[in-house]
Length: 298
Image (tube, rainbow, N blue to C red):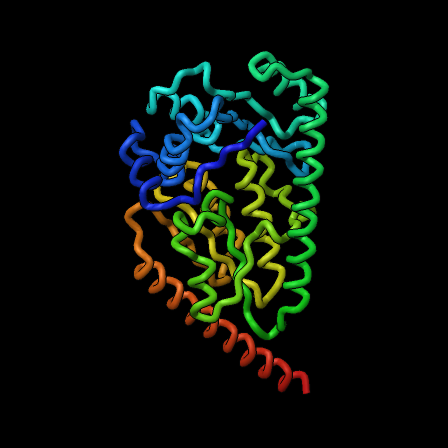
């Protein structure tokens, strides 16, 4: 099969998505419409899976994706008037074991693609192996970065969903802008937080929500770590998650950046620079308190 990808998010894709979406949603949903419209006519099939769940560290966790992610293939089909016969939209539960996922996918798209179930299963196993290798490499690099980090210097762990964290149009080049003002930062996907205890949130519904909260707890265990949460105006799951996130962070300085299509770099830079000042003041106070404690002990 020949794979066709949409280009990186740009002004045209963003504008197209905003103009074609049929209801007010978060910015990433609007952008997804622009990406899909960009691909219409360039490929025989559009692969628009309905992904329901993600793998979870604990069997008791359900790991659901946002309802917008789950239903996007249906929403965009209606908004853009796409012929259903040109769409591959299998319902996928990544929380299931691989054999079940392979069966789930093959039952929905096998006839359209004209391939055997065994071929789909083989492709799925290959893809998941590559994904696991990629995740392991991210964790390895993340461990190295954190091990090399001076314990007297702060580092900011950035939480959020991947379509925000790694799309420079959606996050207004957040990584570059943090670096520009001298803040060391690391996205949450570089840290394996699967062993972090989240048992005091037993009914956590959202997969990414659980990862965000585990990362916040990971940050709180280290005095020179700080957290920046990237979200969007109109994000339903985050409207719940942020209460728990704030509870975990307690008195530790954190920043929540809520972006949409109206956000501008200048406003973001003002927030980042203010957060940097808060972090530096917090670190200075910690050093001062440590000196006082040492004097008392001596």
